[in-house]
Image (cartoon, rainbow, N blue to C red; front, side, top):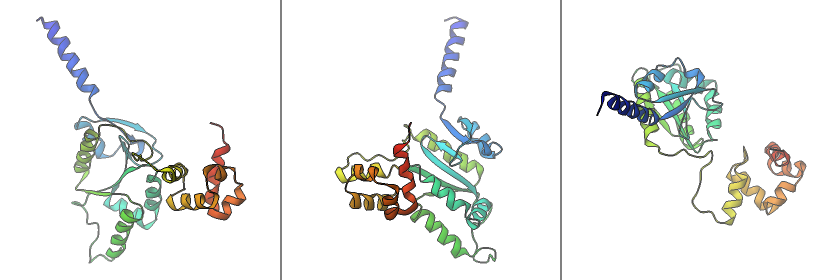
Length: 226
């Protein structure tokens, strides 16, 4: 084997290794975050873009990242509640609270925010918004978790969750739930009132608004061209 053969083989191995690097999408506002440098050191291919929802997209999982101070301030001004609502677009989603080794999330002796208010909000995130919460020690720990997630998932998830088999009623409900703002309760209400999808889509805005209020506006999409 010649020197050039060895060089060529080494280069091919390097290129193959480069292709194997997990790629994640990161919101451009995270560019100055210390997490980014850590991710690169973990061998992650970071692609910046303007994400409308979340800070990180890791193969279908939307991750909203907050430092402890960010978490507390966005809880008070209700910005986080809106972000959690936006995360509902992804079946796989995660709220990551960073820095619990560096700052207490709440303290019984704190006079700024009542600890029970924070506990109540955490419960709301889990039970009302159905968003899992991950607490990390610091930015290095955050990067390690994201790195593990990027390598653990083998396939990308779709924008909506998929169930292996539906009966007829579930199929009809599933189609309606694909419209923004239409949840299980609203979908069932419409199907019980109008009987089938054709009747729903052919109904006037006035008829729909009588049943579900402003949510009816979303069905204007039915008449829109692609």
